[in-house]
Amino acid sequence: MLNVTRSSIDPKVISRLAAVPLNPRFAMQGTVSGKHASPHRGSSVEFAEYRKYVPGDDIRRLDWRAFGRTDRYYVKEFEADTNLRLCVVLDTSGSMGFASKGMPTKIDYARRIAATLGYLAAQQGDAVGLTTVAQKIIQNIPAKRSAAHLKLILDTLEKAKPQGETLLPTILDELAETLRQRALIVIVSDFFVATDELKRCFEHLRFRKHDVAAFHLLDPQEIEFAFGRPVRFVDMEGNTSVFVEPTEIADRYQKALNNYLAAMQKIVLETGLDYQRVQTSESYEHPLMRFLVGRTRARGVR
Image (cartoon, rainbow, N blue to C red; front, side, top):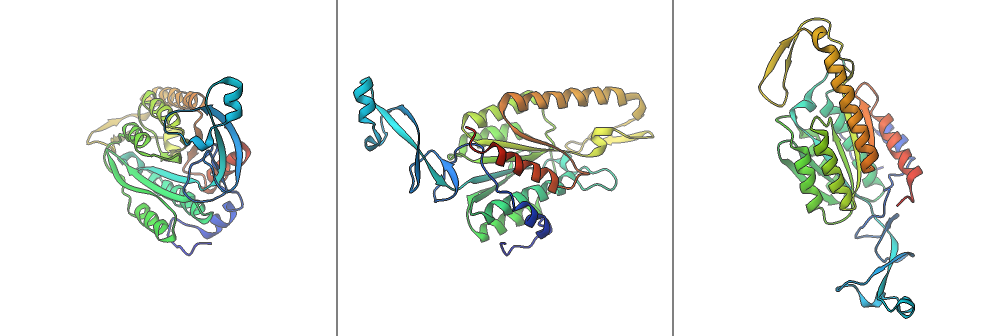
């Protein structure tokens, strides 16, 4: 076990989760030898597929037998063992500071998810990066492999504070364009943004061949809307508030919530997103275990 201690890291949880490897669902690209499939040639290779030659390809990889059969140039693609590149995207907008009585704030819960995933990836020799976002990118730490780098990421997570509005879809589009190598991108957020914008940015990330996963955090109060008396609701991402009688809007709220969650589920089906909906009343270990086990079962799927 790596010699790193932080409040967001529970050694007992790490020990239990480490029994299940963190696997990518698709072939990765990396710069060092590791245990994950990559489309690049390496020290341990396995033929993957042919593709048409394009200018700039290494002519040593041309298949002359295929040329003899088809009179066209084809290049052999191989899979090699390489390292996974984990990029965690943490939503630090104002709504992530919400917590009902007795519950952790969504940002605290998200810290534990992000820190534990980063630790597990680093422990198995993979590169880890972190991007914290709200109205813009707050911190962007590229993926690297070292204990010192992991400590930097954990320190950044500890200092992350929820504030301001969120422009998560815009930032995810930006990451899709700037991340040059395939990565496992794990987004931890309450996803309080327009679902059509989410679908578009998830499709953009998948188009760029990234393996995209999401932990969708919701406080129990956001699900149940169990307010028994008039209450003032404050927009945590703005400066407005409204005083309402909960019983007068409960039905409309529940209908809107159900429509929103149904739209999210449709996005999951249409984009192939690896999705975990999580209530913050649940131990963070449980959704992480579901996530890891699900990837073990899906390994080898292209």
